[in-house]
Length: 156
Image (cartoon, rainbow, N blue to C red; front, side, top):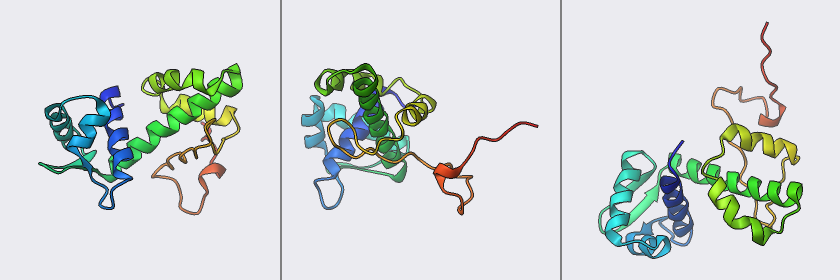
């Protein structure tokens, strides 16, 4: 599991890259968004590049790799399902849970997130009305079986 700092940078690169046609998040815009110095951003972009999550281009910024996009979507899915759970199951207001869901998204496992999704009936939208990213499909799964038709294996 990536650190909270890595996940937050990946999310921010993802968000900023959505507004550029070439999908690049510039160092300056990242520094502003993260509230840190450009030097701190440069250091983290090099780390993201070493982890295979982004392609770092000196003096330009970074673009997420496919693995980086997968991580961003996974983190956004975690947060969205946590917000749904806190609002629907605990009857909390969406404004109350935003900060809690942001902090919790970094500590909850994918298995717990999957179970929350099942418990909530696989919601498609979070309490703010934003679409919830689809879960990743296991690579080893047969291509002719839909992800939601898979059943757990039984031991014999």
